Image (cartoon, rainbow, N blue to C red):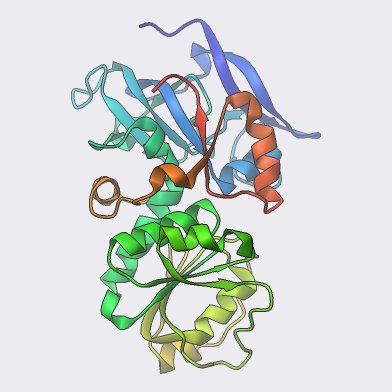
Amino acid sequence: MTIPDAFNAFYIRGGTPYAAGLESITQTELGEGELVLRVHYSSVNYKDALAGTGKGKILRQFPLVGGIDVAGEVLDSSDSAFAAGTQVLVTGCGLSETRNGGYSEYLRVPAKWAIPLPKHLTARQAMGLGTAGFTAALSLYRMQALGQAPELGPVVVTGATGGVGMLAISVLQAAGYEVHSISGKPEHFDFLQQLGARQCVSRHGLHLGSRPLEAATWAGAIDNVGGSMLDGLTRVIKPWGNIASCGLAGGTELHTTVMPFIIRGVSLIGINSSGCPRDLRENLWQRLATDWRPARLDEIITREVTLQELPEVFDTMLAGKSFGRSVVRIADD
């Protein structure tokens, strides 16, 4: 198969008013890299919604194709490690920030970014995981490196009905942890319990106290919210527990004291999934396909959309009304 002279992509031009939408682009706009991919699937992340609407400063140059995740087939390769026909995925690595992303029928990427699609994962399932699932896995990996273990007690997940939240619950459950969840959508508590959440707490009316140290409740946390939620978590984590900070939907500021860190030995871990080293990235994708694989992954994928439908999905996500993971079908898997 050869690349057509023109093909569809969700192109972000920026400017005032902000311009982004489906366009026909050409091979000359693909950029550089050893691999040309025929894209099968991408996904929708909070970062994609910010980039696609201009409500967050994500792109560092314009214009670019959106989409921080991509899974597809190698169509052409100048790298001996990847033969034509190989199924691969790429998440993060500057996609839709400094170079074209996955919302395109064809894409060129550096070979060093491409991860062979793990066995037992389809391209659709890989994008159901995407950056969200990789972030959950990286969070647990970093927490375990600092001593987090199931016998220490329950780990709480905030923003639990979002993609990262659901996948974090699932990964923790697969790894043998007791999982609790915090969400502002109590109507979905039954589903969270099906994923493995032992206890579900409503964000509405939740009070984590205001003193530097409050009663210790959880052994650790994966926080997708930030802001005042993260403030409160620092006060209620048990001694030697860990908080993985991987989201900012609730705010970017952090107001706390050093007391949780120097009295209880709590660790606050920053999770940067985009800049993760390749060896670790490949290892974690293998774990997501095996021992850390979410048991109900296909149910966590709650929506499949096309490139044309992306603006509606972005608006829903930024309004806080999304549930689960949305994948973007670009070509047949």
